[in-house]
Image (tube, rainbow, N blue to C red; front, side, top):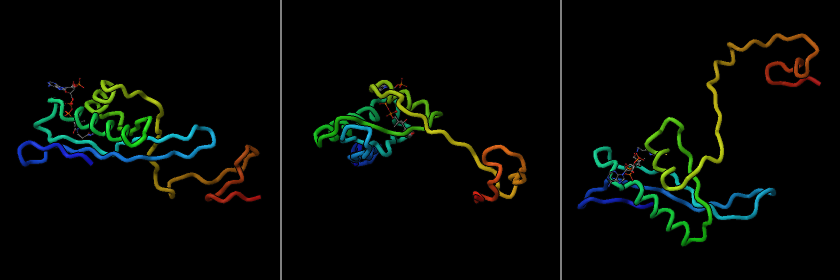
Length: 125
Ligand SMILES: CC(C)(COP(=O)(O)OP(=O)(O)OC[C@H]1O[C@@H](n2cnc3c(N)ncnc32)[C@H](O)[C@@H]1OP(=O)(O)O)[C@@H](O)C(=O)NCCC(=O)NCCS
């Protein structure tokens, strides 16, 4: 973690860690993963965030990372803009949807379509 200070007061921080994704499809690699970054609201827009990002990247590089990653909500425009300015690009989408209560879900189905014999989460063979 890196802390940005102004005088003796903390005004921002960033967390970063090294991870080694394991996948039979990918070359072994070391990734610097940004966890959180935040700057005191009244001091935003002055370069503190980008300085913290660069510190995290330098730390990751020095520790063997050859790639950086982070997750950001799509609606967080200030953060997305900052990351883009620093060279980060969109690589993946995480998709989601809200679930209603299970009790509200229709369960009756009696046709021949694949899956029509799945009831209450059990697949009857
Ligand atoms: C995202 C966040 C950390 C950015 O911090 P920041 O200190 O404002 O970042 P910077 O000042 O380096 O950059 C922000 C903008 O200020 C601009 N800027 C940088 N230095 C500047 C300066 N000296 N003068 C004027 N503008 C400047 C940057 O170009 C950037 O502009 P943009 O809006 O075009 O992207 C901050 O908005 C924040 O804490 N948000 C809430 C927490 C959050 O959402 N974190 C991210 C979770 S993924």
